[in-house]
Length: 238
Image (cartoon, rainbow, N blue to C red):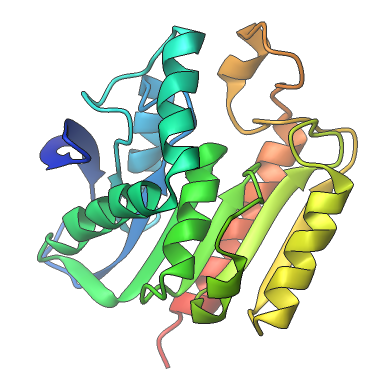
């Protein structure tokens, strides 16, 4: 069952989505950061998909109201606010993490984060704060940051999945990100999918009029498998 969670951050009333397995735990926790169009029904169902894997899963809300947006100008305005203010972006991400950690079933020592599109960028910024995360998975994210020097604080293992034909992520940006992570001593990997564009995990993109957005079933499946493999590695009890 997916439950709505109300919380306030960034002068907005947020409505996240929470789901988890039966029992009292402790269970590993996963924070999910949605795509730019907001917490639509497809992305809300992702919460249940992670719960089915044994996580207490919380999908944060970074637009407000916990709903999907269809107006491109409205989406871009909100994303612009967060892109231009890294501290605001990190505050919104931390509020989502705090909401997840407030669930008594969550094991605070086994936390991972998954982000899609700008949500992936947000997940990477959260990692740069030094948050105690086991892993961060960023799917078709933006890779540019104004705080590259703070990547030395990252303790999570990183997995970035991106399309080779993503027009929003240039080859140079990928190379710069690789160098940034290497210089910071981060445990990182990038999975690059040939012929794949932006937002390849969301079927809605095939109905969009935005050039460069396209769902790709194979890349979606492969990135999910890569993510699960990383989670198995970092969350294994020893």
